[in-house]
Length: 68
Image (cartoon, rainbow, N blue to C red; front, side, top):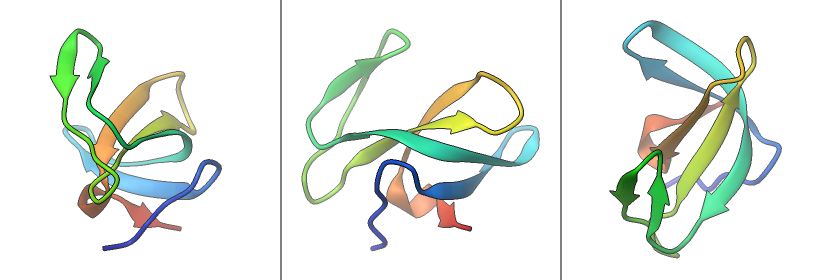
């Protein structure tokens, strides 16, 4: 599985198509995001990514992301 770091430029497929952004946080423990409990661990972290085009921030697991 690919590991990502803060500042990495990535893309992911959303309902609106492919989105690009930069990783702003790496979660290695469970956390609450936009009112929802999200599962994360050191072996399967989740990443917060800020969109390049908007102020939208998304949270995804590594397999959903592609480094660019």
